[in-house]
Image (tube, rainbow, N blue to C red; front, side, top):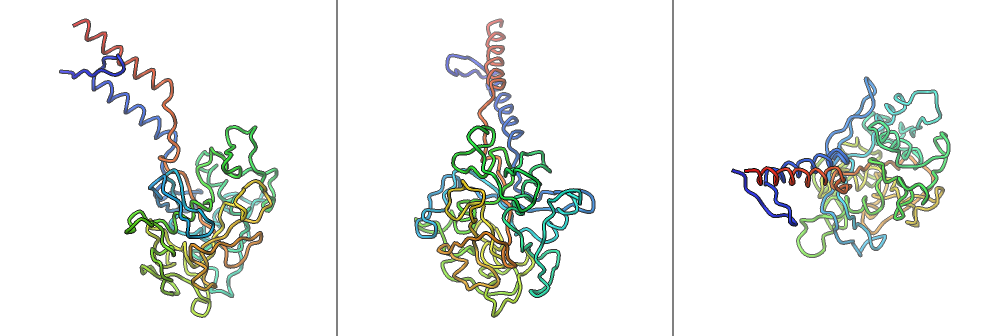
Length: 346
């Protein structure tokens, strides 16, 4: 026996509502899939995997004790790479795009810093090279590129999206297309992934260091022991493999403190309105003292170096929840009306 409920003057069955709700959920999931998992890119022998971790707790308050101030407030759920991008990923990207273009990415020769092993972090990469890599990740999965470029030269500066480009333009961040699913983390996204902890006791939910502590992490040359990080040249002459770069952040991300400094998407001035602006860098590296990993240290630059790498972020399904389509709304009312008619005929 069907149980009927009133909904704004419309009598419909719980079964109809259940079917309609399922349709809405299906539309939402099709429109914005979650990539919090292991995702494959490339093909054949040149395929590689990236592991993403979900950064939840949308709408968190900003931290007002670090640099910049405020920082860390993000109003949506997103994912971030658990590990820094490795040399192997860049090598396979180069193989996938082939030689008939000018989009190949050069890596720093790290033989003087422990070698060029495939799982070492990718360094010596310009911000624009990192952005081109991210654009390729998007097109691999059928999404729009995150960043706009006027030509196919790998080192050319991006062109911010404009108001007339309504499908892509976001006034809060003209660098990044609204249609992209993979991108470099903004200063807020990076900061939250590194320092925010929803389970930290008390009102202050931010730690001073990415390993979930207010004290400098223990130095290590590599490993996964909690509370450790790869830093300080006198002990660490080289970066560790990206999967062996110290303890995790509260969300479960490795290497946000130490190993290699990472590019932010955001410009140093945080305006993101000039394609040639120096970009922020964050997190310290194997060559730095511990203070460089702290929430109070943010740097910036325009040139690549042997101690600068990057990681990739992406949107989670909770980040872009589309409005219910008129088709689905019509289905809700159509099914409801059909149920009411059947009820009247009994």
